[in-house]
Structures are given as C-alpha cells and as structure tokens.
Image (cartoon, rainbow, N blue to C red; front, side, top):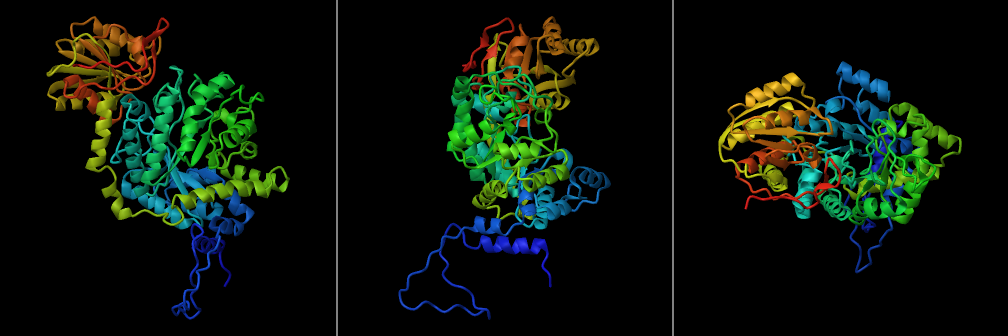
Amino acid sequence: MKLSRKTVLLSSVAAAFAVVGGGAVIAEATAGGDEPDEPEGDQPVEETTADPVGELLASMSLEDKVGQLFMVYVHGESADTADPDAVASNLERLGAENGAAFVAAYRPGGVIYFDWANGLADPEQVARLSNGLQDASAVPLLIATDQEYGSVVRIGEPATQFPGAMPLGATRDTAAAEEAARIAGAELRAMGLNHNFAPDADVNVDPANPVIGVRSFGSDPDLVADFAAAQVRGYQAGGVAVSAKHFPGHGDTSTDSHADLPVITHTAEEWEAVDAPPFKAAIAAGTDMVMSAHLQFPALDDSLKPATLSPPILTGLLRERLGFTGVVVTDALDMQGVRTEYGDDRVPVLALLAGADLLLMPPDFPLAHRAVLDAVAAGELTEERIDESVRRILDLKHSRGIVDDPEADEGAAAEAVGTDANRAAAEDIADRSVTLLANDGTLPLASGSVLVTGWGENTTQRLAAALSANGFQAEALTTGDDPDADAVAAAVAAAAGRDLVVVATRNVRAGSPQADLVAALLDGAAPVVTAAVGTPYDAAQLPGANASLAAYSYAAPSLAALAKVIAGAVEPTGTLPVDVPSASGGVLYPFGHGLGYK
C-alpha cells in the first residue's frame, strides 16, 4: 500500500519527537510486542544526542518546508465548512474550499483567527475549529490571533476582556500585567490557540499616532520595556507563544501602515534610547517571535526599504546586534505599507532574503507560495536558507509543547474561559487604571440623574448601565464621533435638569465635532465630565470640563471602573503613562500625573 504524504509526515513527526531534549533511549520494543529484556547488571544507559527537529526537517520535501513559512487566515466557523460564502472566500484567497482542505494540501506553518472570518462565537466552537485544523495538518499548526485586549481584540465575551496595554501602564503594576497575560494565555490555549501576537513593544511618543496609541503601554521606554517583558513571561506561563511587535518601533508616526508606508525620522541614537529598550527587554525575557513593521527607518537603512524587507534591520540589527535567535514574523503582507513598491510575488521573497521566517497573510497565497518555490529554483533563495527559517518555526512548536499537545479539550473550554476569578482580575486592573486628570470638586458624585452621551453606542449604553448599577438614574444618548448640529442640540436638550453629564470621547482632534458637543454642554447648567475611552490626549481638545477622566479603554471592565470612580466607590489611582500635550504647545498633563479624592 502506498502511504499518503500526510501519513508519511505524521509518522515522521511521531518518530522525530519520540525522544525529547536529548534524553536517553533505554529500550527498543521487539517485533512481537513482548517486553524488552532487562539489562544485566549495572550496565550504563546509552545516551543519545537526538535532534527531533532536525530529523523532522530532513523528512520534509521542499514544498512541505515552504508551506511552513506561511501563516494565513481561513474562512469558516469550522475546519470543514461548507458555507457558500466561506468556501468562495477560501477559494479566492487560498485556492482551497475550507481550512481543513487548505492545511492538508499546503501544510502551512500556522493559521490566524479573526472574528469576521471564523465566527469565534463561543469557546467550544473556537476549540472545535482549532481541533479540526490540527487534525487535518501533518505537522501541528501555530494557531494564533491578535488578542492584545483594549482596542485590538478578536475573541470577545465570554472570554475575559482585559482593558489593554495603556491602562496597564497607568497602574504601574508589572505583576498585574504578567498575571493578566497568564490568564489570557490560558484562556486562549483552552480554545486551541497556542500563539498570541502580543505584546505591543512600541513606545507611543506621537499623540497623533493612528495605529498604535493605547496599544502601547506608554511613552517612556523603560516603562514599556518592563511591561513588555512582564507580558512575555505571563503569556508563556499561560501556555502560548508570544510575538513582540512592531520592530524596529512604530510609536512615532502619524501614518497608518495599513494604508500607506510610514517614515520614522529618529536618528540611530534616538532609536537606541527610545525604540530599542522594549525589544531588548522582550528578547531578554525570551519572546518567541518578533514582528517586523512595514515602515521606513532611514537612520537604520538608507535604502528606504520597509523594515520587513530590510536586511540591515532584520538581520544586521535584530539578529546580529540584538542577538535574537527566535522566529521573525512579518506584519500582515496584505497591508499597503509593504506593497507600495513591490508586487505580491516579490514581497515574500524579499522578506525571506531580509531575514524573516514566517510570512503572515499574503493577499494571494498561491501566488506567494509559488514565488518562493520559483526563487529557490532560480537560485535567488537557497534551500539551506529555507531550512534555517523552518527550523526556527519547528523549534518554537517543539519548545512550546505544540507538537506534543496540539489539541484542545472542547468539552472543558467553556469552563476555563471567562471564569469569575479571571473576570475579577480584569476588573481589579481596570479599577486601578482610571486616571483623574482634572476635577473642580464635581467628583465624586454619590447619586443623581446622569446623562451619558458622546462616542460609541455600546460604550454609552454600557456606561449608563454601570452608573445605574452604582445608584444613579442614568440615560444614554449616543452622538458618535462626528456629531452634527442636530445631535448636539438633542444632547443639550437631554442634559436639561440633570445632575451630571458624562461625555465619552475617543480620538478627539483639533476641530473635532466632539469638542463642539462638549462646549455646547458646558453652556448648560449641569456639570460636565469628559471620559476618554481611547487615548488620554483627548483632554487637550476639551478645555473647561468640570472633571476629566481617562479610562484608556472601552472594554466592559473599564466602563464599569469609570462608573465606580464617578460614584466614589473606587478611588482614582491611575497615573498617566504618557505626556498629554497642550493644544497650544507644551505639556498640559505630564507623564505620572493623576489626581485622587483623598
């Protein structure tokens, strides 16, 4: 009987990983299945120098190895989905009908989940999807997502919802950051995910940064370094591999690399002082991956190639100077920042030549896959270079226990995710992160009638509900991030006769209609409290508020914490992890600022 390619690879995996970590081989079963003979006397046990990863690598064809270089997303709530829309999307992007067919045919290194592609409806469904993909794969998969929490979260409730990076920075508690990551990692692993694209190691020094902001722990390199290292340790303790991102640093740009190619103008000395410390700390803590950024950094590579395609940055700086030996993963290759100059057939090849190992989300997988194979055939890439990257990927899978234990317990997933204890931990972090920036004595307010207005339908409704739970008579009226004159007038009318107006704000820039809303409400009789549920920089554009709060997040625990702080049930103890600049220049509220009630 001719064995299938999958059967051969599965046998190779089992054989290669049968001896782990250079352990001793003490016996070999006989063909008849009898117990082996006992050794006579005190004969020494022969030790081997087994290389399970090397043995597996040697068993793989070039096509197998090239498949390992890619991580893609698949459509469908199950691995064998027959949903017509999912099938059509998979065929268009991947050349296979569903996830199971794709991983069986191409043997990718991993799959990344998104709520819009995979449903991610409940823990059991996610675990079932994960197991289905692993069952179809000859070599166990990296199964990943971007679960940074806060503004970037792929798996919603009932998974525990932590406030995110900048709120953690506001607590100044690295132990809490490590514990949050441990809990989050354990929940992901319970659903069959074994890799998280976190933590964000960017130092957010540009208040206008449209892509990082609250995803960063703050603007101080040492603070970000301490928190990034803590989260590396925490996620790994929870059972998942981690990826520090976005190297060499994405914190000082006003351009979104999803849409264009940013340029970082730091000097080499500024990079060393500002951008490098968190990546050095993450590497020292043992991060499994470092993710490249799609941006130009002329001081580090004057060719102006995006960092993802830059040998001086990925090899010269990250590998040789910082000594990183783990997996270098690209940011998503369907982002415009890496596609401005090169075609989708060239980007994967150039990324590998630069020093990347894992190619994330090419927009046309069959094209990218063929391009790498063609580059090897043409001699542009050598098979030895491919082997280097595949070995790193297989080493990661081995070291994180993915090979030994790839599947999840579908029946136990729901019990492990969103437990009371995990939710309590998230609430405690949120309670300690809320920062009181300004207060004329309006807060705390123990009771009364409150209008909650401003940004976000879910945000305003949840905040009103949380205030009601704290004894207020609260009503929500959403005006959005671009309220017109009618919306402003409606909010002013609804504020009449209230004891307090709370305005939720997000991404308020100069000239924003959100500022017009706050100004109109301040002309009324009710005191006005602004509550920034994104970056705290909003405060610079909202002068005159009776009190100003920063929650840094619109996650449910952060909104509940805002309500408790407003009511005085929780003392505001958060301190700014960034400078908030004044609209007229200078600093309005400095790093470390934070008021209390006592």
